[in-house]
Image (cartoon, rainbow over all chains, first blue to last red; front, top):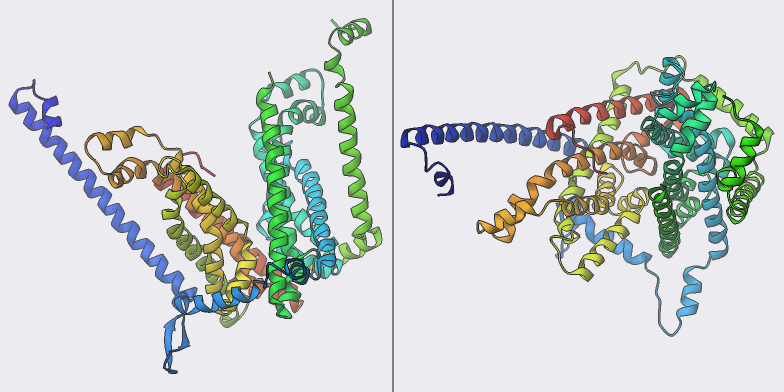
Length: 315
Length: 285
């Protein structure tokens, strides 16, 4: 009714042709959309079938029925009760009247854990420092508008890509062999990965700067280094600080894991707790990491907002 | 004309802050830098960064790196198919983990969006829930799932799915909040129910954003899928850590190069898909 009302002033014949043209276009559009849907669905089902075959998604397992017989069942519903049992074991018994003693029992290794937690944060700090130094220095030759020449650009970009594509844990495996077990390997592994990630982020910031200050420095006779120092750095600094804080949060998470392969920090305690089947230790460690990560995330978020806020208020 | 020292002195007297920050700011800066440098030095000492140790480590790393050239090539199909299977498992973990996470997160995301769920306390509670799920480390989740579902890629799939639920729910609900209310009012004015308002008013606006979030997270899951194998949750990581543990550095480097190549190909493909489906919209992260 609303469509015909629009055409009410036209003679009936024109109205009919316009309407039929609209109908035709609409039908064609619908057909194209449906065709796209069919192809998309087909591709998705194909990908799903292939990946679920190779990823063992429909794995079956034997479960004991209530009457004692063994039956084959899909593993996901069958595994959930097992998961529940496992998680139940990790929950410590806390009673109200003996709360203090129960907590002391739950966190019985707290002295070692606090030491390792401190080490974890220090590993993240050192890795961030190395990542910032490496990423900052390499971000200038890696950004298209600032690189001195094409080869330097290509080489630094490939280096940064390799450094960030290989995960921290793999670097840690290699460095544990080279530098022996301990936090040194972890610092170098996370630092190398952070160099790659930060170098890319920084170079993206560098590519969005205003080039006029650099031209000014050049006109006053500045070298490439002078241009970067006085033309580019003041523009990118607030963004760089914000990205650095974000990276520190990520590094804390990474360094709490990295001990699993022997590169220092709390991760090694996870491994011991798992192999000694100390279930309540696992939940205690999890609580420690969870609280630490939450506090650090919260603090750095506040700091980042303040820095961004300062930047916006600048005239 | 050049600036004389008189002029500089005059400028300094007129706008002192352009030449030097006020004293409290300078003091704070010095204190911050001293703290950082002291902490750095203490770490160097505590972590035993002795030059001898670094030098020896670098020498060993040089030996390890020398296995890169010439790159190791698998000669028999049986060996190479094992590697290919590992790469395929990693892709399967990333794909199914992303899909499962998205399927579960999509309905949850509506509960966290301001324009859908008007109950403030409920919405904020749901949002805290997303944060809690996101705080679980993928590797720790994998360790837990291995206990319940056995060694293999299934544990990896579920680990990625669970950790992605929090991320997706948060990103999706932000995308839903960023939609315009006008189409919704249009549907409402022509007599649409609440469900129809969401389906025809909101969904067309958020679908491209959701698609781009999915592709972006799939890429990042391919990267994190490579390490899950180190704890036994399937994928190429298992083969890699196995080769490193056996000091077969040649093979290990070749596997690392294959991982890098796979990540490149996936990034390139998802770039194509993104352009085809979404056009050149700004990526909402």
